[in-house]
Image 1 (cartoon, rainbow, N blue to C red):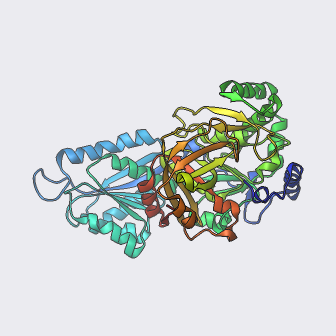
Image 2: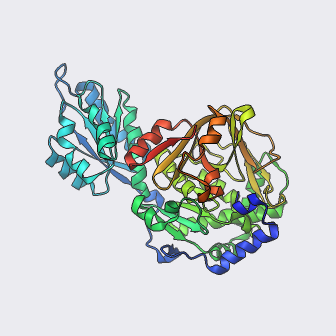
Image 3: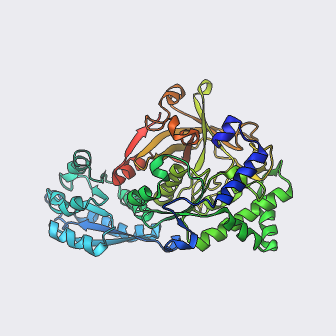
Length: 485
């Protein structure tokens, strides 16, 4: 929730007045492009990452320390399979035996291409990696057990020299796809375009478009509120009614909202769909969400966008925005961004917000059931979803802050209210290792009250235990991981 709401200093009328003031101010911030003024990127569906893949020579069966025979063929066969599975990855593969050959293949793949090196033979990795390290390219090394002794070096290159390198040392060939998923995430960020309805909130670096461009490569495009107003005014009324019927008919139940509340929220769904298409955008965040009541909250629209693989973030929270985008690119998963609060009596952490993805397993997964509710912070007006998440599900709770640190903890969803009666509508209670300790370590020493209540409060929840994945991704990005549990 917003800081003013937490302090009780704003009522419903003030919420709406504050939105009008932001609109009148034009929302414009120095350093940000505005709508059509910015360079138009390729559509999200057209993005592709080339991965420079370094292969050594195949060894002779039963001789020396090399990948040979069936193991080598299994690895080669995986590349086509991974390209088909991921859809936006292309391997530029070559046999290289020295640094010059590796540099030539890197040039062929392109200056932004991350590197996947398949270690084979004693000393091979040491001999070919110097141009990768000199260019400071994100690199993943796959080392099949017994294929050489060079698996020892990548962690040293990272820890002692600061290179963005991570190691997958395993007999599981599935680690190759895992490596490709993680390698593509920073590369896709460089092709990304995020829309911002001000005001931005979060850590200073995450809110600075110049630092974002430098560190992540993404463009931040500021959109005035009037843009949505214009789209709404031009919507086809039959399409609005059909969207309204869909939300009502697919809900388990409709509690507080009137049909008109759902109509206004449905307009927002269609308006954001159109805006994303027109801007060829990959993500969006809205500041001052609570001031949108007169036209309809964007909460249903955010559920719909996340379910389609487009991160949509509340309250202008830029740290949560970059978190959702990285997870979407790496794992094809949406997140549930929300406010967190401790219950030491149940050794638990709750997380609650008035929107959330229903397809937490990804766009092709099954949608969770939802109730249509009024927004809890404006007297039950408007229409928002209360998504009923999966009990017993392992989760990862994280946030990428300051553009240099992942805050990370884990848990299991232990309780999902059938109908929430306090705090925001969508809620889950997650069992954690030590709730008392989490209360003390919250923020990991890198977030403090000076960053704002919302920045301290928000985390993003994802289905699954992604601890190792986040650690690998941090290695590839040259950033830190701090546990909060």
